[in-house]
Length: 350
Ligand code: 1WB
Ligand code: MN
Image 1 (tube, rainbow, N blue to C red):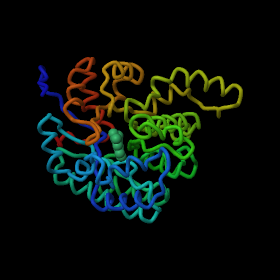
Image 2 (tube, protein in one colour):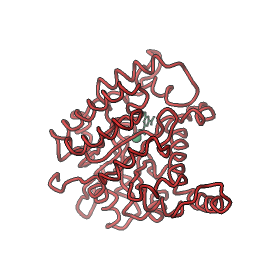
Image 3 (cartoon, rainbow, N blue to C red):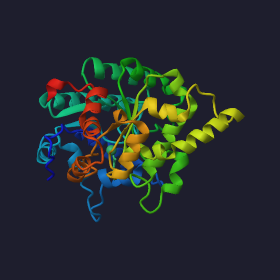
Image 4 (cartoon, helix red, strand yellow):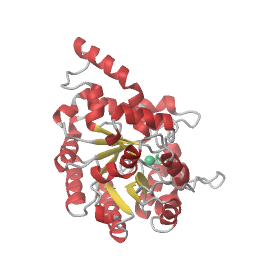
């Protein structure tokens, strides 16, 4: 265990996954019924929800379903004050619209209940079903107004469509109007992207997630959607899904494309949208150099700590941030202050 010298900083981890038996059962049903395809979500989800008896169990499902036993114990053991919980990827986005809406209501209710039992230990991001943007907005409003949840989460594409598609604009508009962050978490790559990531175990967290999510981010920036929703805040994990590292080139080529008419005209540059409209979390990237670069590129107000429980172990995620090459002030921002601000986590929850 790590023992920080100068009084312990509050630790708020912001990309922490859970599930509930009803959603897990529906997921199992769905992955069993879906035909086998290369890449995409299915091969990993089969291991999580329907592990064949002769294969080693990945053990994620137990971690997802447990909220108040092992999870709280592990938080206590490593000094994690709070987890901001979200329904695990791909949420309800593989179900038909009616099933998705029904399950998302249940998931958000269950999330609000566990937060009510442990208000100092848990906050939560509300899920919604993008399959029905109209009902999604209703659920978003209920999640903030009635359930008092802290923001929203969606898992990249829905049926291979991304959020720059005008049919999803009501969702972006609602998040902006409520002044709540929309966390976009990865899922398996969309139809057009999944084939080449279908070998060597690349399809999920190793590569496919990041390729799909990075593409999603660039679509949002290049489409000009942030001119329509200038105050919209999008949070992405995994140290920005490699986009901060590519931003110089994205920016250069996009501005050239704008002069030749290949990219839509936008009022700000891609680099400016990245700084103004995105927040980035450290989930699953415990590399001090990557952190230092990202903080310099985005600013210390825009980077937040995350573990990615139960997919990543807690101890090294805490050790990484305790030892991070940041000033004490920046470290406090990344460890808790930014989370308190953007997810409106009450001080009295201390
Ligand atoms: C993994 C990571 C698997 C995540 C997941 O299944 C999710 C993995 C839904 O590390 O294999 C995640 O949320 O980062
Ligand atoms: Mn995650």
